Image (tube, rainbow, N blue to C red; front, side, top):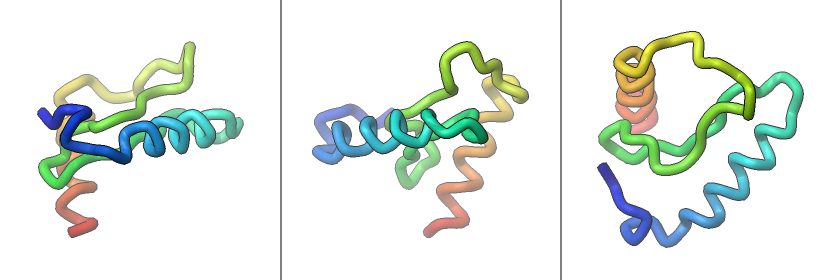
Length: 68
């Protein structure tokens, strides 16, 4: 898992996620590293995930692979 020190943009990423989560239609916002590890982000407060943790990790890895 990546650490905050490895991402000087952490504060910027965090602010962007919070901004996105203000939108009514957005349930989740996050940034992943090249290995699909969630750097920052999460679900809107009070919004449950539709997938379990293993499935979320698979989705994040797939997103990382597709964007490279």
